[in-house]
Length: 111
Image 1 (cartoon, rainbow, N blue to C red):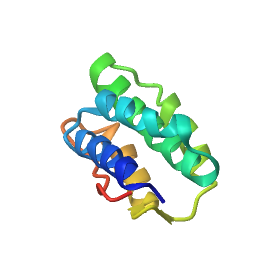
Image 2: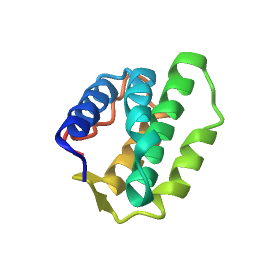
Image 3: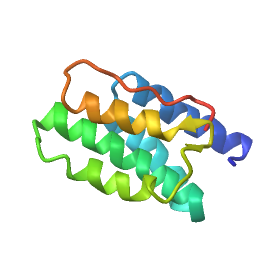
Image 4: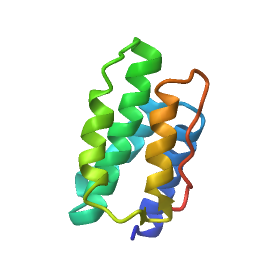
């Protein structure tokens, strides 16, 4: 899926996401998203939007979840597992984390 260099960038974003540094994860993945196409682009777009949803919820107090619902539209175009990530589990964990303080959904670093 990713080149070795891109894998390192993806892993950096995953590590940041897993620590609750969602804006920083968003920024790391955006670099890959700009160059991606097809399902890889949809996958990265979904992750970026999930990170943005969590950031807006816990750093700005947003209760709307608009970015989560945008992410779901991309997730719905992908298989349940993509790039080593269980997208069904991640979607559920992010939804729960949007309603539960100090919960940190996890993205495996090997996308």
